[in-house]
Amino acid sequence: MDHNKTKSPMVMFAEDWDAHPSSSQHLARELSKFHDITWINSIGMRAPRLNMNDLLRMVRKAFAMLKPTKTFSEVEKNYQDPSSRQSPSDWQPTVVNPVALPWHGSRGIRWLNEKLIKHRLFSAQKNLIQQKPILWLSLPSALPLLGNINESFSIYYCGDDFSALEGVDHAVIEALENELVEKVDLILVASEILKAKFPPEKTLFIPHGVADYFFEAPGERPADLPHGPVAGFYGSISSWLDQELILHSARTMPHWNFVLIGQIRCDVSRLEQQPNIHFLGEKSHQQLPDYVHHWQVSMLPFKNNAQIQACNPLKLREYMAIGKPIVATDFPALMPYRNWIRITTDDNPRSFSKQLAAAAADMPVIDQLVIEKAGLNVFDVVSDWHDIQRMQLHSNRRTRQVVEESWKARALLVEQEIKRRMTAGGEALSGDRLCQHQS
Image 1 (cartoon, rainbow, N blue to C red):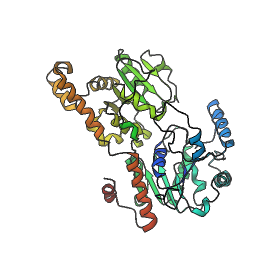
Image 2: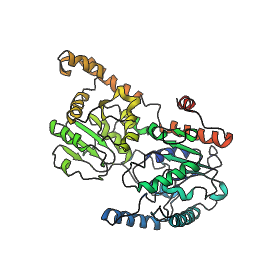
Image 3: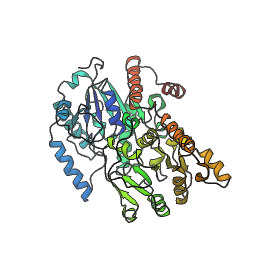
Image 4: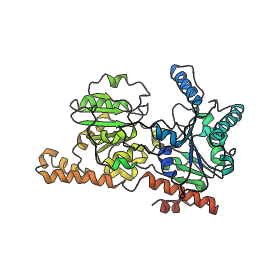
């Protein structure tokens, strides 16, 4: 056992471990340096409906429940992914597939879920209850575990505004979240908007970080990335993506290719009909930097809704780390980086496509304004290699804005706060001291 680890193991209840890496998963990898971690996969946040998607999800979950729990050594032995940047010894937690029912509004079902989840957990980790683990809950549906595994400390990690999230039984989840907030020892939030929802004396703002491989040199150009200028996006392709902005931009800029990487979770038939819009499917998180390195502009084309106002997308800092120009619609999480991103502040699709064209030169906004005021364009002022180098410097400065914002730094802040509260039991830091603590 690692002597640097504390005596307390950690139980983390979050989304499925084999899903696209989330903030909880990135933090788990770093926190594993201090704790032996057991990861419990999600049980969902709404009752299933009578449709094909929910039926398939139920079947997948049923099969997952039948799988034996895999420890790290078993995962390491079976690891085969030559395209990944991860090494064969990349850390994995002990993953538990819970047996549970997704009808969280029923107290009887919650009581039953507590018994079922505990049985599965303690079968995988027989001495856990004697070790007084730290309990980390990323989903309100995990409430049945709170206070029932002899935990020494409890954390609610809130990465989304569940009251605005799609695919959630909002009234039920809100009630579970309120109870969770009242009972846990520490609340961690991923955005300032979320921070305002919870008691300040027990809430700490932990912005998202960046994985180390986003700072590495680019690999080869992916074979499925179209040639020519590319505006790219990766992430969940869901209803919060502003399809009108993308479609209008693709029609206005027919010589550009618009690339979308990720799982499709909404109707995209209109986008599929546009010949210069390309859906490349899901990629491993470790493959994404190579795509960003080889396209010209990164996009954050989000709708203006409650969910986006509260979000703090992982891809924002990952885009920044690569250094390529970024064009985004406006939302609060952009605030620390507004000087380095081209932001559309209205709902006019023409504004977004105009910003894409301007961003391709990767020229500081102030320079662009001077050029436009003089009635010139970028080709009038780029005369030699020194001008190109100046644009490259702008890209390097963008990368430097997030070079200290690694997941390692975020996890260290979390670990320090856990230790401080467990040992001192003092009051949570005030808002001003929190800012100092985070800086």
